[in-house]
Length: 484
Image (cartoon, rainbow, N blue to C red; front, side, top):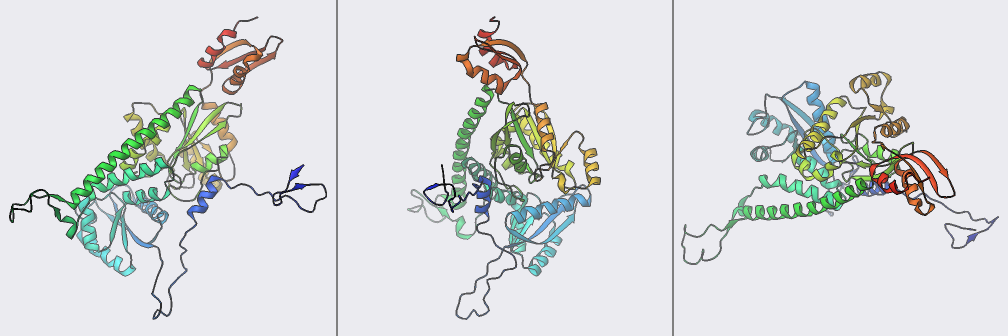
């Protein structure tokens, strides 16, 4: 007997009511719906024609102008960098109006683009009605102050823009703490004060009989803010160290159980989360946006021959990833160095995928060098081949030899990827021939889940198993080896 989904009573044969079964939404679908629950739509206006009796209001996106300095490489490389900055700005919720590139040997130390170009940029900002200028580089505190004073609008650099996106998309406690730490480290040298913010707070006997010019200096508002930021950074470091210990404990438990680990890394929006869903059915958030998912997700998977392993999706990378983020997300990125295999996902639809591969490898090699560990074996996976033509596929095979070509969206090449992962995972190397009594069935189960069974036979005394296993399991089976 079954029960209907809409009525609290059993369903009998011939009943006119049928159960209504709706699939449960995944975690990613619910998070995506929550992220889109308050979205501004371009082209729809809330302006009122008659504003004599009602307060005039206008809801619009932040309007930005992009500025980049082309110092090396060719023009296509500079335009690609500015196009990526535009995608970052749109992900942060801005509306891009103009994009400008200036050819210089190096950025101007005072204003980033030079005083003459600042005047031209001011005219463009005024003509377009922009309220923010975003620079394709990390500005020094002096450059930031000079540009804002001359342009009379808010100025943001590439680092602050990426930090803003991370702040919007962080969900877990660890992710929020990592982003806050990175933001405070970025903000600390850029603190500024205006007007009353620079006033001093005198203390003690400073105002009693010291007289003009002899009163104690006290502490400025700027110094107070700096001290509070230092205290908050110290607290966040302690919290992240405790979370790092928890993460290390979980990793150590997996290593003790001899479960191989596979880390998924790659450029942002290359399809890492989509690939994790395709391989494990994890149901994590998938969105066509840069840095859509920040929190690492670990799921269990099985090779075609029955061996279990874990898949961990890590944070995405980008060109010139801010060093504050690399330091803050160091515990997360350590998942890559501690894995048995690195699945490096590349977006096949990008014009220059080899440059993205180089950017990811640069950051990972820095982390491996700091921890004095070697990087795990790498398996290149080119994703999104369903949007690539035949000629482009041939070019990708030449640029990225040995890569596996898949489409996480359509499922093309996923089985070949599973086979490639299974071939590169470490295999058991200790051969055992044991007669395990039926009272120790858990050992036989471990042989099936962790080892490679060559032969198995059920006898009156127990299970005769011949298999290749890892050293720890071989030690547990040693009392039963050699029993006739």
